[in-house]
Amino acid sequence: MVSSWKLPNSVLRASPIFMSEKRMEPSKLLFCLITFSIFILMFSFLFLLQSDNSSLISESVLRLVLVNNTSMFLSPNSDSISDKLPNSSTLTSPTISRKPSTRAPDNAWRGLNSKTRVNLGQGTNKTCDTAQALLRVFIYDLPPEFHFGLLGWEGKAGQIWPDVNDIPPYPGGLNLQHSMEYWLTLDLLSSNTPTVIRPCSAVRVMNSSEADIIFVPFFSSLSYNRHSKRHGKEKFSLNRMLQDKLVQVLISQDEWKRSGGKDHLVMAHHPNSMLAARKKLGAAMFLLADFGRYPVEIANIEKDIIAPYRHIVRTIGGESAPFGKRPTLVYFQGAIYRKDGGAIRQELYYLLKDEKDVHFSFGSVRSHGISNAGQGMASSKFCLNIAGDTPSSNRLFDAIVSHCVPVIISDEIELPFEDVLDYSEFCIFLRASDAVKKGILLNLLRGIKRDRWTAMWEKLKAIAPHFEYQYPSQPGDAVDMIWKAVSRKRSSIQFTANRNNRFSRSQLTRK
Image (cartoon, rainbow, N blue to C red; front, side, top):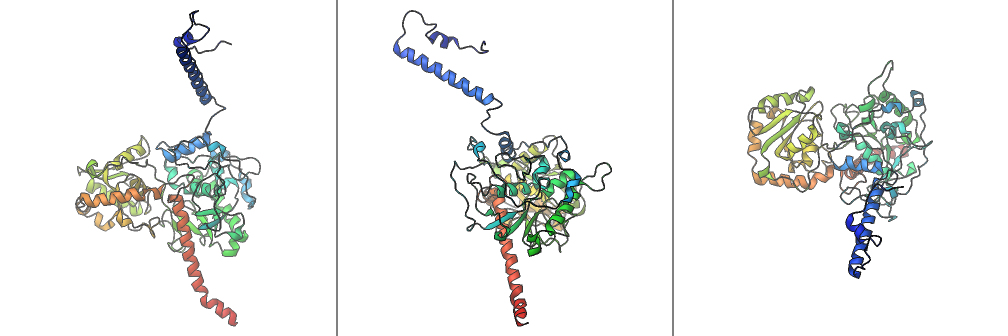
């Protein structure tokens, strides 16, 4: 078979086959042989990289790295995920497997470069000591239709969880802002894998009697985003059917009956994600974006966790612009006409739209809207975070990773990790009733001088890593911070329960 490539003339001339009868000097001959060997080596390496069956990095890992580390978001699969899910007849079987899934070695992860946030051991066999972990977590082995099946993942017969080497990517765009259910589940699944280097804040245990927290792996935000609409003559949407089935499953479990659900962690970050099930599961600890659409008897700051949105603009690295290189004073881009508490956006728009150093305009994810917003925030001194349909939005966290000092105009907002973070050190707060008064907002911001702004900017750079979701998790990132917040909340709840038991048990003893 004739090869499709040819050797350079210089190499051909150096080959013994084409040499003249006159012998070459030994040094020149050695040089030619080395050159020829290097050429063959480089050609072989390129051929291996281009081979479909010899990829050095698995496609699933590359997709996950893209989602984590770039501003290029993966488009949702155009094929209907519901076509890949079990049919509605499977929604009647409230069974949970308690058999741990097996996992293959992590060889597919090797070869990732050091610039990614993935930090894996090289066969170190180091595992977290469950006795030293802040949280010992038991995961219900719910069927895949509740979690990775919603991403189109199909395992082998009887397989509940994907292998940590072959992780289906989460859909990009605005879907990402409520994706903490994905990152937390991956973190727990990998907590018993020796080659994955991660914090030991939370560790999976296989016996629920050893657990501090019972984790409910329902991707409720993804279920709402993708499956909340009814199709054809369906009486209920797939999202509603999954919620109904989840309630049946949970309340039938011994773990739920033992505590009444108080030690269960349910993820419901999208404000509309658990509207059908929340009342029946209200005793559980919810992971939420805010309390905007929850009655206080179901969700409140005493028992529930506020988790940060996953930012959708690119994180600024060491090139963060200082005060003098941010020409825009105030930046806002997003939906302007909102209902409920978000009506203030319209009022502010008419107050600020004609100011020369203010950018206040409508924006969306279309036509490079995400990258444009990231560039705008990175070149602005202050970024407005105004209440929308609910008190919170991902815009706050976009501002934080852009090192643009957030201006929070949302009276009912609850903030993640506020028991350990003082937001007044890096945010400006203004009541809505004051913000809509002419001149109040701009006079306040123009009165903040370079030194004070720079101090807040430096603090932003320091705390920004606390709002990064990544896999594997790293010390102090969003996943690690959430587990620590759950641990603190659990301790607070246990403290209250113990105090309430002071006299009740004494009275029982007297009887």
